Amino acid sequence: MDEELLQTVSRALTHLVYRNTVVEDLHAEGVCLDDETMKIINKEVKN
Image 1: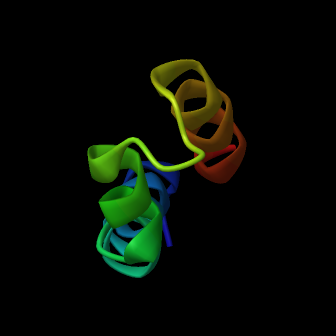
Image 2 (image 1 turned 180 degrees about the horizontal axis):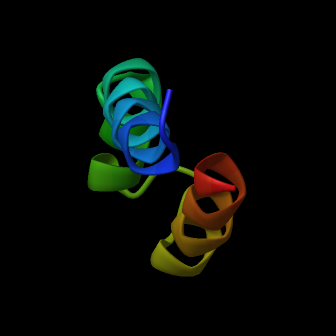
């Protein structure tokens, strides 16, 4: 699998299994996850 396709698939999976979960709901509600914390988490998940 070429590198570009692998990165695209990885980003799509991350979005589906992470961003579409309770984590995003908690962030939207401002419960325990402020913007700075979300930036840190997003960077870790992306890597």
